[in-house]
Length: 112
Length: 114
Image 1 (cartoon, chains in turn blue, cyan):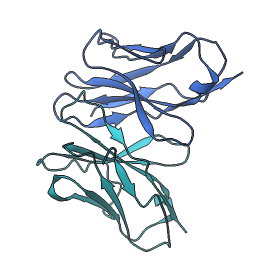
Image 2 (cartoon, rainbow over the protein chains, first blue to last red; image 1 turned 180 degrees about the vertical axis):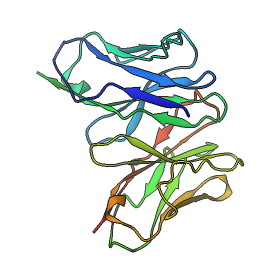
Image 3 (cartoon, rainbow over the protein chains, first blue to last red; image 1 turned 90 degrees about the vertical axis):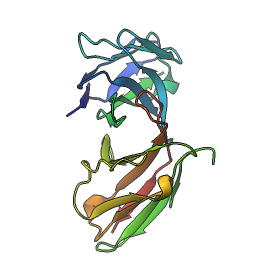
């Protein structure tokens, strides 16, 4: 079945460092891809998405490009802030049923 | 309502008791999901409802777990004969069909089995 694999955390960075969180997927068909974020004490919310190959999703300085050839959707940010500390989840939604499948989440901690 | 509403927000129950968790999705959303998030763990898929189709129950961990969605709106997740390992945050989400649409999450129900 469809699945999502993320790099394991926790990831600890200093403020203004470059961030990459790797995400790869296995799916039949043409899924849509998402990054969700869960800030401390808050619910999950959508960070960005891409619905077809080569699309780039972006929001709040974060970016991710849908790479069909490598089945990847890596999350990047050029300069992280303390306020970016959160748990990040990669997810896919298959093109037929729409079922949403999540990776295991990656905890990011940004130190001043 | 404006968002996905879950109740109760917290539930403490004794081992062996049954519990019911409720989810009110966003009006008009045809897809509804239940997930479980244990402490320090990721999101475990439980069940998925999509319109009038048969639900995808492939994530339910045992036959003690069941869920229904009445009238295509409100959903109830029932856990019978609760065990300590059922302690977790239970999250509900809803979205428009189809894939590619954003899923909106509720704040969750924190279940503690003592």
